[in-house]
Length: 326
Image (cartoon, rainbow, N blue to C red):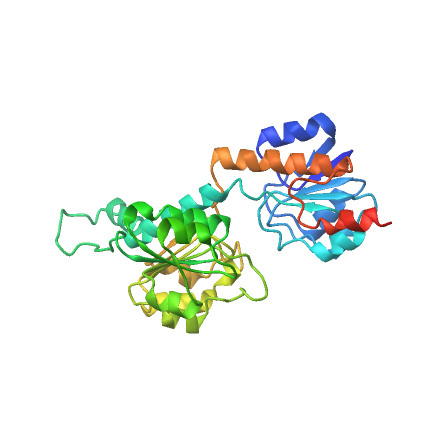
């Protein structure tokens, strides 16, 4: 079995693949072009790709032998699932393993914005600190505030549960009720406008879909408190970035913490110049432990799929239903 890996991943994942497959890992430490991916899958049975890779119908159909795609990510909006399903190709992802890690980063961003950590670090390094002052770089308390969770899935739930020690009121919006949050935090399921109006901190944990694209636009931002903080560790295009930049410039809200961007990796210069936003380079799952677990999970999914089994984390299981009726 021949496999193409679009970028180097933690070695344990590659070692697991090497036991069962002949692997080719792209030597380029950057996002590959479509042509480079298409060239890479030539003659390959399997593809292990990243969320930064665009795997559209043209890429999927570039190699007739291709029979399994494993994504080294939870999200798979970068992959044309209908095109893969049409070809009978299973697609897998790596859910669950990065839940706590991403939730922790969301909290790190929240604290950084509320207490102006990044801004304070620059202030000290530039030699501007001349001693304690009563009005110096005042931030916001976290405890006893209202926390708004948009999307109460795995990560949203983990993020919300970590608020218990801060005695927060928790509001959430989701298609379904989350009995775990309601039981442990007395969380309330509310409509999005109410959540935006009442929350001191709003954290995004929804997938990128047609309905969540630009979910947080100018109208949504104007609903929020002037003291509110917005956190995004989900997908960049959920926020209308120009609207957010305007909101931060004009102080409609207190600040924002972002790990993802609308046109990633490009970030507008206007946004980068603002000191009331903390910017992270998409490191939601970026710990040694979690990235290694992701690599092993992606490799396991790929191997099982190539051997004709159903990958544990297959996102288009209808492929196997279709095969069983043939």
